[in-house]
Length: 336
Ligand code: NAD
Ligand code: TDX
Image (tube, rainbow, N blue to C red; front, side, top):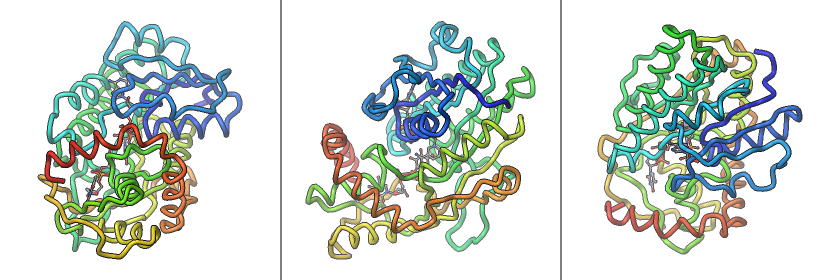
């Protein structure tokens, strides 16, 4: 598409959405961004602090609200849809908000995008493909079958199907990206890397689920943001692109690396109850994105990336402190 000048970013006050908004405003000086965010427990206005008011408008509202969408969507060149319930453990405890936001909310948005003929990019996850065996060396591709294992993954799989159906049936000008596990600044402390770092900063022992051998494929959030921009502006309509940086590490490796970087003994952690249905291994093949759009990850040194994130959380205690106790008490009530 021609370079969009007016961009609607849903979920732009969350972790990846706010990093994407910062990326766009810093790198593309002619773009105006409207963030639509319901400010759930995971959304935070402060995630957007310091960005230029002249090119950023914040709308507090729900993507399920069709009347609100009819006010916000007209005049936009594109919608980038990040808004979601994103935490697997929360979806296991109560799937209701996941179905509401991730499924119904996505349907409301694509309907609005069709009504007002606006280009749509959908942000999704590798979890829609289920998991791979630990001994398996293959990786997911764009043609891997959908086999979601968790309530969260099932809701994201449904949202992907909705986007494809509205593309085919209603002519929605859509692309989809499925990305692997992100790390970076402003990630909620319920997630593995920030939870571990803030526990260690607090003098508490971090927690490892199950046997710790589960593998995640880590990517820095800035590499994800750049991939989304390339797909939005140069991707082929109707296509799906996988976004991953060949960053496979087992959870115990990540935990031990963080303990070492933070000057702790290698065994200064607790083994806790496993997650029900815990996916074993995620691994993505991003060669389509690399081949078609010449995208390559910049943050290829994971240890250096983690070192920077440790420094970020150490320097931003006032950002994470207000959410820390609530997260730890929910985890404790699950035995995690
Ligand atoms: P997050 O939980 O940090 O942020 C989600 C944001 O969406 C919050 O600001 C929240 O207030 C907002 N939101 C939730 N429900 C809403 C609603 N009904 N209406 C409007 N806003 C609402 O999530 P994240 O980790 O930044 O993930 C963003 C997107 O990226 C999600 O779609 C997720 O599935 C996808 N994704 C995440 C990862 C990851 O590693 N975190 C990896 C791949 C894909
Ligand atoms: O304290 C912990 N200890 C632990 O061992 C936590 C919080 C997690 N874990 C494990 C569970 C997972 O194997 O670490 C791994 C990562 O856990 P999460 O950070 O909860 O992420 P995950 O479930 O892999 O999902 C993430 O990546 C894909 C995002 O939350 C999703 O939104 C995204 O789609």
